[in-house]
Image (tube, rainbow, N blue to C red):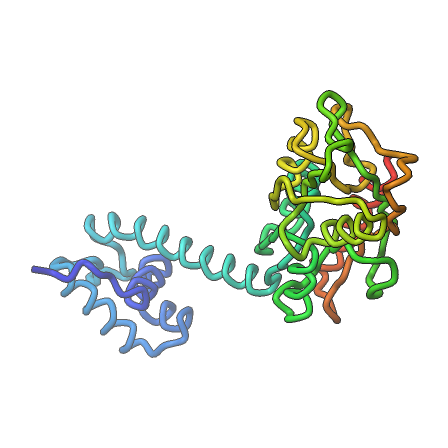
Length: 289
């Protein structure tokens, strides 16, 4: 039984002879000696069990079997060249590991990422969404190249930052603010808004309890709208189903936070392009068109 695996080196020598019509010219083309090329073609013929070249005339020509193999050999060489080019292109452009808050992880972000991927097809994107304190820790550990985080104003300087005014929200149809203790709809422990909420209520002397917990922004907004409790969110995220609790005596004012873009030192050209796109996206999202 013949080995079905074809050595690409032997195939290269065969193609060179078939296309040049000469072992001498083929040897120059593949940078080998004439005897080495001849031996390689002979080994290929032995492997396949047939003659691939007619050596009897002035020029070397392919036999019917050789002509059939030549088409496959050319295709294999083209595929190998494409594989090398794709790997080199990908290795040259690298990857970008981006961390984003939950409220930037869906419709707001993906169209921009699609445009970036069209411009940089060789870059591998790895996007992580989560709570800001987790993203910040991963950025500090150099597990992220770029990170958008919600932070207290002035916490850490970044590439760019945008103020993020906060507001207390309640359900318009099933308000929960008058309940005692007041139920809270919060992100998991450690989330920035959660700490601000409990500190403000403790300062006001108002009793509270945790009524609903989720890491999903969509779930937080739905829970408030459906009357499971009040919450503290960026003002831009309030919907028609929410009532903004302005002027409530027992609700202390909460300092605004900021959305900050952080980048590791010496970003690549692709990362700089991504930074520019993120700055434009955040500017539009935070301030409107």
